[in-house]
Amino acid sequence: MTDLFADSRARAERLLDILDLEAVEQNLFLGRNELREGRRLFGGQVLSQALRAAYHTVDGIWLHSLHGYFMRAGDAEKDVLYEVDRIRDGRSFATRRVVAIQHGEAIFNLEASFQRDEQGFEHAHPMPNVPPPEELRPDQEVVAELKCAGDPLIFPDPGAARARPFELRSVIQLGSEESRRNRSWNPVWIRFTLPVDPGERVLIHCLLAYASDMGLVSTAMLPHREHVSRDSLQMASLDHALWLHRPVPIDEWLLFHKHTSMAHGSRGLAHADFYTREGQLIASVTQEGLIRQID
Image 1: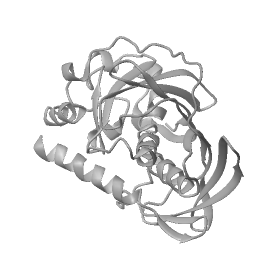
Image 2: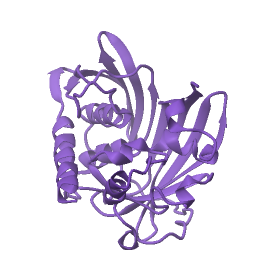
Image 3: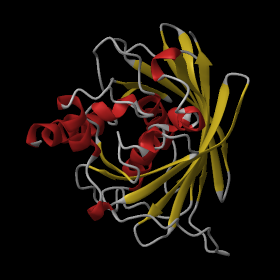
Image 4: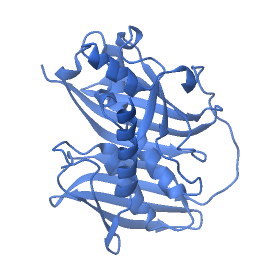
């Protein structure tokens, strides 16, 4: 298993590297790709780089929400150009629009809103009662054992078979009988593989944006697990919204509580909340995805 986790650390280092964008011109930034293996770009990469580009144009003000639309599949062999439009700079809030461009065409559009730190009312929905990460097995270990046993790896997220910059521990163990049943929720503990200085708020927000796109489209298919094969589906992110509520300890365990509310018209809607292990709600995300049956 050592090599698996070494691969995850290498992916984490690569992610940190590609979040260091190249300034091409005022409001123009170039981003390299995490993987160049002929695959489509992971939406979380484009989302996190677009946010990083927006952050290059603000100072002393922090993301509180973003909304993005995925318009075209990204080309893993081509760097991504990010163009930032400085929509508004107010005393408390700032707004930025970012367009990600490849081959002269927009592949992704981001609207991001930033706010200066303020105090106010507080309340939050409580964290669900789930086992702590210490009582769960790393997903990579489980996947490796399923492969050795010849299991067809029937679980909602095929990305679990690959090394990632984040360590994942699923509350509902991959490949278990429970994981193969129809359900509407999929809680997973996650943490960034490498330590991150808590003062690096911009980097932490970009890493959370990356993580917020992991496995959300497939979550919308959970109520149909017993009747539909993953191979028979065309799946893609369509739009994505993220809200940040509190500071994010990205290199500590966070509960990524994913669930789905509906599917219709070849689209599925999924939501998730991020909780610290102490039960504090720190971020929320909603995504609509394409889930078209092709067989």
